[in-house]
Image (cartoon, rainbow, N blue to C red; front, top):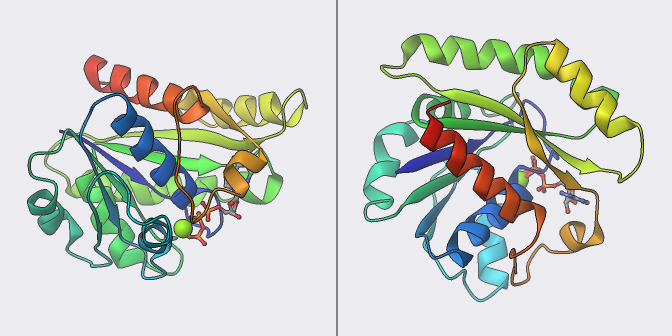
Length: 207
Ligand SMILES: Nc1ncnc2c1ncn2[C@@H]1O[C@H](COP(=O)(O)OP(=O)(O)OP(=O)(O)O)[C@@H](O)[C@H]1O
Ligand SMILES: [Mg+2]
């Protein structure tokens, strides 16, 4: 099973939007996703409620021993995705998710204030890597990227130079995403479809 956690130090970086859209992208291609909402704010759960349920299982797991519990919930699924609360306020839950996920995805916008917090998050991931039995991968997902602006490529260069593995998929800043909370999601042909392809390829390649 592919296990993915959306993590950031800060709130409001696109974790919930990415977790929900990516789960739909996997579902649309015939895989069985499980979505865990580990945020006590419960936005993913609320979204699924407002949308009259998602076409795959969703559960609230805002607990510090998520790494021990999530496997039971995700039994029989092909991919498990966790929407993790911001590390700065919920370190216990976030560290538990970082212990569990094989792929840690850090959604970041090409804005100085978000790029500035990438140093500490790298440190957090390295700390958790030390207590894991197996190796995890971590990557950056540039999102809320303004198409044809210089900020996206510039952020990619800054992050790559800092040693981050920046995914080639970028998620544009669009009303499609900012207005999507609470409604049904159709991910086919979107950037999240591309993200699903890229994450499966990384998993297959073991990197
Ligand atoms: N690609 C995008 N284009 C435009 N707006 C976006 C995009 N992705 C997310 N947003 C918007 O950015 C805001 C933050 O996104 P989201 O709620 O997914 O972040 P979060 O990290 O889960 O936040 P929180 O820490 O509060 O749980 C939301 O208003 C969302 O609609
Ligand atoms: Mg959220």
